[in-house]
Length: 247
Image (tube, rainbow, N blue to C red; front, side, top):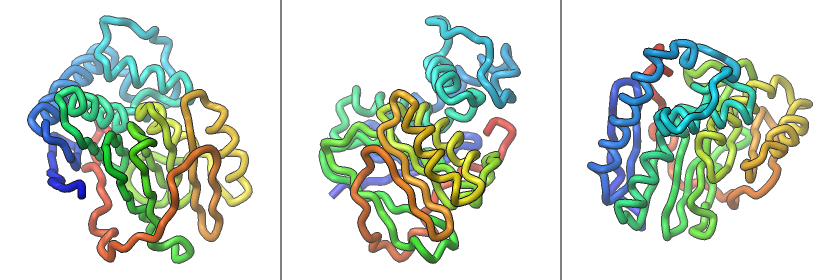
């Protein structure tokens, strides 16, 4: 059984971390955050733009910036749409490289997993009574995997859509994070679900998408097995970041 879940708070970010290399992981988070803040200080539009910038990817940029720019270009959103997923994967890669056999990094609902054992992740759909007690069973052969989720009805993140949750599955957490935001922004009624699934699956690097809105469920591509969640306290375990200008 995977255990030893530890929390780490840094500025506005709230992480849940499962790794034998906890210190390496947290050091990575702090360092990458400093690198990103220094870059933003020189390129203020990077933080505020809602669309891709005319900013070529360069080897001199911080790794977080390069990944966020790439995800921005593929999804048509501003680079900050990929920040949480980016930080989760960078931390997860440090954990793996340090030799940790099990790695789970969760950053405000965006998760990067690299484990030998199967992992079950609960899906919290808020007050939606149609899809209570859902969970994802992620098998070892699917990992490493990013699972990034956005909602137009919960949380503080900017959203122009109206769905309970939209989850994206990919090997690239920056891309999954931005794509989840793109999809969630685009679901405003039940009739939008099929078109959004097709749009997201057309993005190279996306392996699967799941959408829940009211009594409608839509999925495309390869997604983990859906099972019943046995956790009665899932609402209390939903992670979120503290609202701030950075986010």
